[in-house]
Image (cartoon, rainbow, N blue to C red; front, side, top):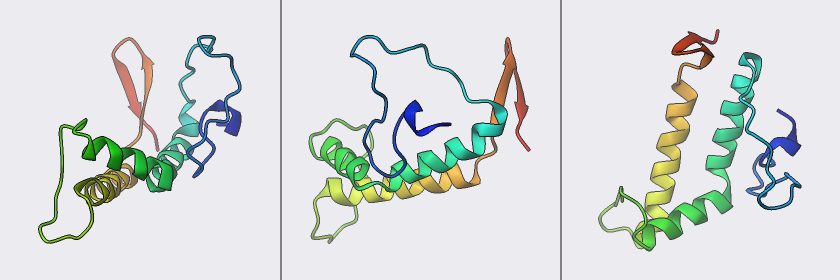
Length: 110
């Protein structure tokens, strides 16, 4: 995936320069691109902007899950964002990758 296709890795900033409301149709990655997509998703989860956004969502009640650590001096959102993002990053690291072959058919990437 080229940087112009979405988020700049680790920046939390979009690199797409398309007028609002004029986005092209989403193009799924090719099977060879799946490992890079996983890496970029893990980079995004570690990004400060992403963590702050999740923390804000948690603190404002816009999340269905709020992990807490009793006795922590930080806000529930700050702690929860770290925990949720670390867990999701770990799930991505361990996940098997699949790609679609057509109508209800998938194959595992190797």
